[in-house]
Length: 596
Image 1 (cartoon, rainbow, N blue to C red):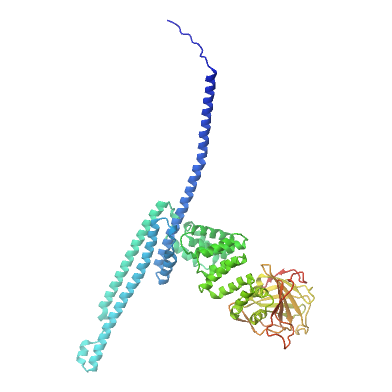
Image 2: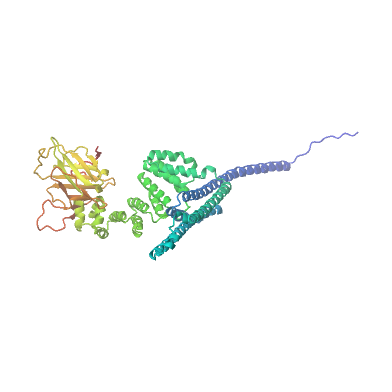
């Protein structure tokens, strides 16, 4: 048997090179496949995350719409008054943003609520028709019987009259039974319609919850709305907030609940919590209604909170608030205030004019318009606004001072000068030992918000920390003076000047000069900003009235210390003078202390 001898195979350099190239290609493919797999994994995860977030947002929007339908249906059933029906129809159902509704079932829900409003009105009308028919039938029977009896008696036919007789309730008993039967049929049809709509609501709610994967805790029940109504009736704000917070797990997708929580937090001074709640509300309630007063109020409250916190987004929030509604005077005025303080004068004026053009809260809106125009510094427009004495009586004094300073050398109207002079005065309260100086002003000066700096006769007198007393009608500020002015029971004969500087939170400084012996204003009463006359408090010594007011670079001369017969009829003039600063002999402002 032959043997086969094994010979080693001969490998060439070409074979070695080919094997190496094949191995490099395989490694390159493996690395590429791995990189693609690694790159595809984050992209797919990101896309799935975005899709999941979008689905959650859509589910919340659907839940909010369903809860609005539920609350409307609940309110219509519980309070079927014409006012409630009109509110639900106009503010909710006829105000829908159809582009924001993505489910046909939601439209069916809103349609069923509209049908419910129509059924309630129709049932009320049917009940009225049945009752009127019964009353008319009874009246006709009684009238016919009475006429027949009267005719027979007039003709002395008492035999026929005796046969006719006198009617009673038993004669119309059958008509009353017919009335009750008709009313029962109306009520029966009403109850059947309500049950049909309730069944339809339950069916649509279940289908939408399954379709959008809506958790059950996002959807309201009637008992949730009952508890919310009970909590809102609580007058104690901390208790009300606790009651509302306990309901949060079942009210997550109901914007009115968020609004009431935010407003309660805002009223309690919890501005950080209120800001977060308002922000959640604006995200949750966006896009459901064409005109949304609740969302507008939320944005303007958010703007005021951001302004207080020196947040640059306050102006944007105020501008957005007026875009949601045009006929809410409170929203317009609040937004105008934020825009005015931010220097957006044109937009602030437009917000105020929204009220005046629609005759909404004209009294406060005209005062707000004066404040806006005063910031513009236009003398002609300011003079035009100050022509109405009734309006001037309602304008706060700081705004009047700004208007007077902007007028330049033009004369102020007499009623403006009288308003300024009659709104503040001072007197010395003589005591054993050191004497007090008491400043009395109406509330339009806003003295509870200012810092005070005082200089006495030699501008070097030191005063203690002033005490502020805020009354229902006026404000008094007591300054403790180091030296005496007169005897305890007798006032000093010497005329005195009292220099006082007020520093407002805006940084504006107002320097007042009061003089003993100056002419007393003609008005014997204060006039508050609503035009009501307020009696001045009783003073103990001769009063000191305002003679000059330093505002910015202007000095407003309200009255000279002595007035001759040839003096001009208008006792107020404006002259340009250096701006009053604490370095003009005035001590640094000190904070006021609230009195007991």
